[in-house]
Image (cartoon, rainbow, N blue to C red):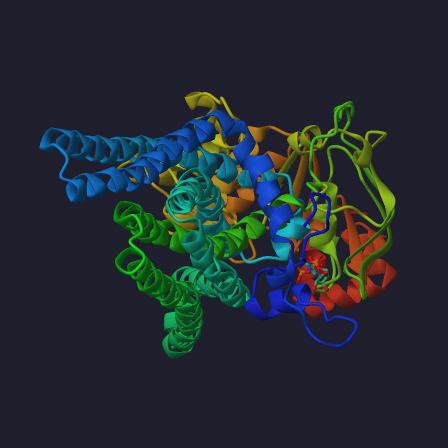
Length: 627
Ligand SMILES: Nc1ncnc2c1ncn2[C@@H]1O[C@H](COP(=O)(O)OP(=O)(O)OP(=O)(O)O)[C@@H](O)[C@H]1O
């Protein structure tokens, strides 16, 4: 995949993945791109992206490995004078020297291998750290669509698995070239020096080995990918079972989850077995061919030594070199398979890295300057999916120091408006203007800086209550945090915990009640002290006591700011300065509660269906003194 190539769309499920990355060829046959993609361009890219900056370390490792390789070849070569010395009855002292030399060579090889392993491991670990940061950094710059299209475990699996694969690929290549290949070349040179004809005969087996191993490669790559997909499914099922444990228990879904998990585990097991057998196949192929080569050499060589009186020392040295060459040759053959395995991991990373980072900071854009805080939405069009227009020409305005409510049937596009105001997505057409500035043309961080958002789904991060509130404004003092918690009506319940602000919130705030979580989220938003507030009314799921507390907090937060609220509560709706009815992606009516009831249109029907058109509801509205 080239650096700018588009990445396959979705990876969150095995089936979906294959459907998007498995195009049919013109002749109708399906080719798996995981098998047929270009190995060498990928290796080159891995090297350029991750290996190049560590080139010195890799050269050092390769040199150390080369020393080891030279020591191996030299020790094979030394066997000739040893054997000839014995046969010719040379002095023992000369032979003793040779024995010391062999000892020295092997020790040298051991030390060189040890040092090279240290260098390779450290460099490899640095690469892993670098790749993990790089991928994470890239994730942070993706737009919301990217996150919606994927399961969160997909990223976790990629980050856990893929950087290791990149490291292993680089490591395997360096070891292969630095040690195995050089050892093999050295030993082949020894073989040719000792007996050129025999050496040439032995090498004839190599093309056969290459051909047979080539067949294994495609399989290894295909099943390595499947095994990754299966692992992701295992993580997904695990995560959903843990996070949804209440629902799993309450709906007796244990068997369903067990069956899902079993299917994923089976898929991984099967794929891993296929990968393992593909990798293992290199052994019998290499063994059989080596046995054939060695047998032939012994047959022909012993005939030459015994019948033709050839040099026994050369033959002995040759056989030693041939035997020693077998292991590196086998490892080199296996390397091709290992690299295919590693390339699957590299591909997982490049799929993420090659997707354009749509939220990359654009230098030179002015910062949003909010003075009054007037928001105008002009003829906005937006769709998530090609076939469903969610907003089609939405126009509305949100006045400073007022609360504007969005009401309307479910799926009408209210939350989408809140998302577009924060530039979570890019509209197809239309504009959003804040105090005269088109938000598309301002620095993204400055826009989000000026907006405080409280949603229905509260998200608390790992850590304590204090840490969670403090995320509202980095560097906030203890007093500011406590003041925000007081305004959010959270201080009292926080102080009720024995650890106070140091109480851990648990994963996603699991150790707190719904209302408590909401108030912490509101404190976080209050601390941000932004002039524009967006609320996806966060009280819908609360009991009336919590709702009252949260509502008080929200009311305080709104004072003196521009507030746009997706309203579900009767009180919020009728107390709003202006109400927009959003239906089918358009603002179909607007006005105060009393005006809209009087108009007797969509709002009145909606209101009646939601709250019942009671005398009481009108009375409440009248009591607010609205026109
Ligand atoms: N991430 C998404 N991908 C695809 N479609 C989406 C996505 N989010 C929302 N939609 C669709 O967009 C439409 C508008 O959704 P939105 O959440 O804005 O409605 P809403 O008015 O806020 O609804 P509710 O009152 O139920 O919260 C719906 O048809 C919904 O299915």
